[in-house]
Amino acid sequence: MITHVVLFKLTDRSAENIRHTRDILAAMTGKISQLCELEVGQNALPSERACDIALIARVESWADLQIYQKHPVHKKVLEHIGQVAASVVAVDYET
Image (cartoon, rainbow, N blue to C red; front, side, top):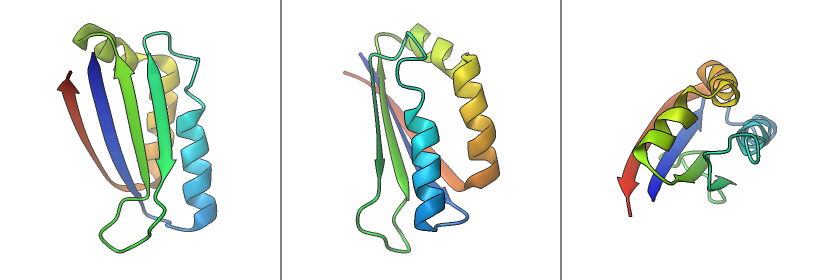
């Protein structure tokens, strides 16, 4: 199992913008068959150092992660992220 964790800090950190972006990320659920699990959460304790949104995705293999990365639904989400994110960090690990 591969776990893909991404943290997003948005340029516009308003509650409305964070919620909208969280919903766009969560909308991938059920649309990419390689995703075994998808969890998206909004930060509950805002601070200057905190990120606004966390995404945790799980896939079966590194090959499935590559398919997910190139999937049209994911690419559409990346377009939105490119417009709203101040920073994005990720980590991928095998369990």
